[in-house]
Amino acid sequence: MITLPGLIDVHVHLRDMGQEHKEDFFSGTSAALAGGFTTVLDMPNNQLPITDYELLTKKQETAKLKIVSDVGFHFGSLGDNLDEFEKIKDKVWGLKLYLNQTTGGYIIDEDRLKKIYRKWHEVTEGKRPVLLHAEEDVMGIVTKVLQDTKHPTHICHISSIDEFTPIMKAKEKGLPITCGVCPHHLFLTVDDVEKLGSFGMMKPSLKTKKDQEFFWKHLEYIDLIESDHAPHAVEEKKSSNPPFGVPGLETTLPLLLTAVYEKRLKLQDIIDKCYENPRKIFHLPKQENTHIEISNIKYQISNSALHTKCGWSPFDGWEVRGKVMKVVLRGETVFENDKVLAQPGSGHVI
Ligand code: DOR
Ligand code: ZN
Figure 1 (cartoon, rainbow, N blue to C red):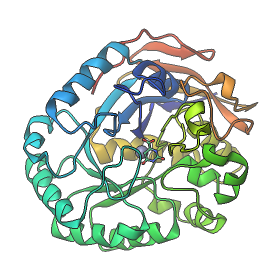
Figure 2 (figure 1 turned 180 degrees about the vertical axis):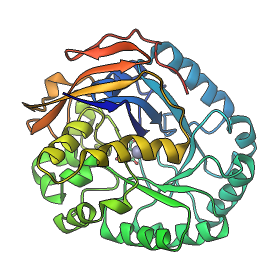
Figure 3 (figure 1 turned 90 degrees about the vertical axis):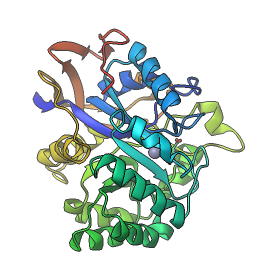
Figure 4 (figure 1 turned 45 degrees about the vertical axis):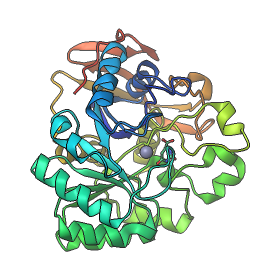
């Protein structure tokens, strides 16, 4: 049995409020605990995007009643809510901006981006990172904006060599940039889409074996691993116009532990990329008396064993090594024997 700190996932979509048929705060944080995460940061691309104080407060009040892990929030912007920044700056951990078309469909250009950056930088005094959904075609804009306002910037879910190399260069230049990679980009490639169909489609999309190998070779440039847990209902995924996204909270750690077992990764990499770096980059509070217990038993990931409401995973049937046996949060056993023991509302909104 191995003991690790309660892990942190800085990028999840828990869907509450408005899309509770996909996931809600209870099912999503149950999935978090089952996957070894005691803190998750929720994205703002809800049915009603979280771009003002009222909606953020309502979302946090809703979360308070339902969550079993700790949950923090990111704020959203399209550039027309700069007056809200002052009101919410101490209630969120980051500002999420979409530079490419994605679920929820909000997107911004270079001028707006600069305006948003300047205001966010002034209001947060450089403390709360901007998170960018920025695929390869927009990385040039990102570098320009970062040179204009040197605000800490996290590039989410990098998926290709073309996205990764400008980030590596920006890091070498000393720009305040970090990046995260998703387990699906580390363990699946475009070849898997043939079998998975829409269940293997997300944004950014799966890339080639060559891209994937480049990530494994340059892990030291990757600051953190984020699941981008993006559950959608099976019927939606099977429809003629399926939404993008895959769930990930319950498969991230087993996949990474399997890589440790196969000596492709070190246990310390998991601690660094799923705990230490997320905590440092987002200045997250420490959870006292909190840990997870892991066994390296062999088992199969199975849709039927998942806690996420969507009930499927692109990794269904995969044989893995590394199972979360127990989760202790602030001294209480909140997960054991595949069961969530915590009461809804016992998690903290951070
Ligand atoms: O695949 C994705 N799904 N990419 C995103 O950027 C959003 C997410 C979602 O919310 O479904
Ligand atoms: Zn996302």
